[in-house]
Image 1 (cartoon, one colour):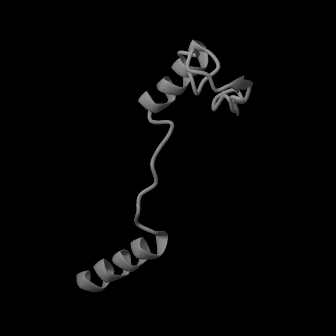
Image 2 (cartoon, rainbow, N blue to C red):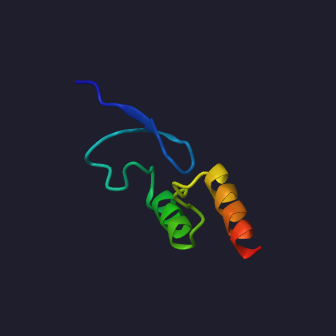
Length: 67
């Protein structure tokens, strides 16, 4: 069976998806630790489910209530 080829999510290096690679999906410990650091420093964020239109409507409603 042919093993899949993937790109390292951090540096883009082409690697074979292999169970012997302890850093997968990354190519190295360095790329793995850089990615972890980006999560820890909150460089990556999961977007809020609220849309901009919803936020604007809430602001308008709040403004109307204050008047």
